Length: 454
Image (tube, rainbow, N blue to C red; front, side):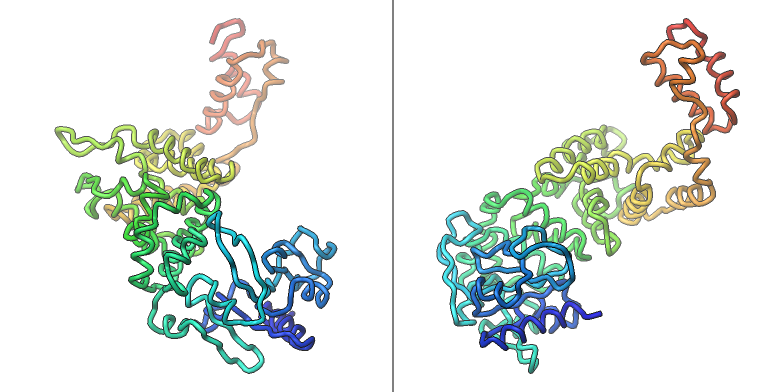
């Protein structure tokens, strides 16, 4: 089976065989120089979109107006020009220069070019501005990208203010690349971000969400959020997280420091790879602490911070346009992260309901990180893990002994009390008190006589 790189090289050769210039370009070249496996491959060429589509009849013209054609490298159904894109594609882009960015994202006018240097000089950062001739393994560097890779530096191509004016999202991308590769941000680039950080609001919430999610899940989340803070972007995109700075915590439970420091430590402890919901749950788990901070006679307290935090987290998820499923799980992580404190004292039924929360492994991971980022005591985490491992799934989620139809057949009138009855039956079943439908019905007759109001 061919690799994606082999497919991209084949595309380069096919373009060259028809008299066109063509190179691998951008992040794939950077990653190859760093010894990393690129997630995708881009090709840059002087062939126009129409010429590319003629050479590769099975293409997807999703960005043809900007000179971008997607060439599939796996067999799939679909006609040329279709909007349905297969999983594996190579992006083939025509050399171009961009004129004006009125909307802060898309060029007002695209001028196709025959000059690869002109194409590179419109790109974002020097480390992403390298071209590679795959036939002789020659790197073409018009912008000093190789030197910046060796120096560990994220630097814009040309004037930083101009690059960021073209697409404000590039400010977040600078932070993400610096975090991912453990690079510094060039001083002039940093100054430009700090002065333009408020302009990030011109970027759609969805694009901001996606960039933040990559920061959280690429393995260097703590460094990313430190840089977001240093650049001034954090207070713009997530003011609720910025508000954690300087919010003290009781030292007997949180010797590590304030809420922001604690949250950064959680981000540092995120597993890699990491799910989107666990990452955002870790970031937001204590978001309710700043507004609930108070100094009581005995110690610092955050009364109701979980309930407040759930509401704040929901607002953030809605603002950033998360899916309903991701929002629900993220809020569940925030809502349940303090329940582990009571786990050894829970009734058997309460404990089993807790252990069967959807994706409970994420709740376990959250608690582990929370402990590791504060007092370090993992006894409750270990208790939960042992209970989960030693309790059969059918004991945690047993088949129901009764349902509403059975109650109606027994002469009970449908109504709100049904929920109360069935919940009480399940609690008794989870406690090990009921083992059959007959047991359950006797329990109902005893606890909920027909004709009673409750």
